[in-house]
Length: 267
Image (cartoon, rainbow, N blue to C red; front, side):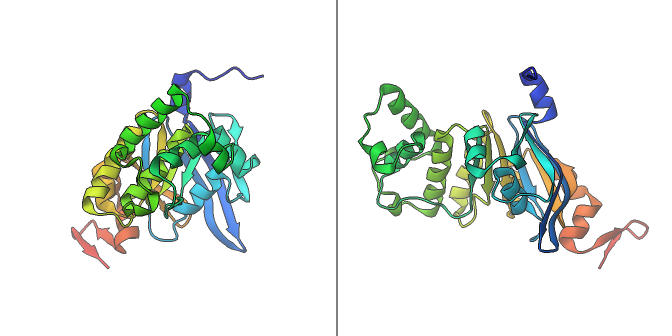
């Protein structure tokens, strides 16, 4: 049996590491030797043009898509490519898709109860007696996602942004170590977008978070680190300022390159 990694060693090596991931969809390589490392307690944004492979990478990590080659190491030694989706979820990987998935006729609070006791059926969960510890966990989560005042409201009556926060809250009730979010701020108002960014920062104080995002203003305002993908590969990594100054990133996003001699852009 291998000795357990010390927390500081795990942080240095990354809580999640993708190595040379290749995904082939009937001859189309959505990922072509993609490498990616996520550190513990990091809020990482994945950006890149449409078709760059961002969502496919999340699909591989959570087990929805199996790669043709490569591996995904969790906590330094668990290869997620050999596990099924439900097994990966139980290990501590939470995945949220772009469209919120909720029960419109259930209240906000009932959603969190169900998420907390996911191994039971819906109605068995709602009939179960809540302990004081359960009550405190739900109250804490309601405060974090900003829905404390709407705990008794039917989820179907919430705004789009509130539904997104509710689903994030449901994920957090399962206490994952890593959260994978696909465009969580899409379709939100400016106020909701701001609140979502602050929520992600708060979550990253205890967990690691990967966000696929197209809204560059949102990325600039809230990203601590950015990974840029292009054609299924890692193109650049660093802070927002660093990747924005990268010549390769400028060419991919703007369809141009800098003419270093003339000091101007060329098509």
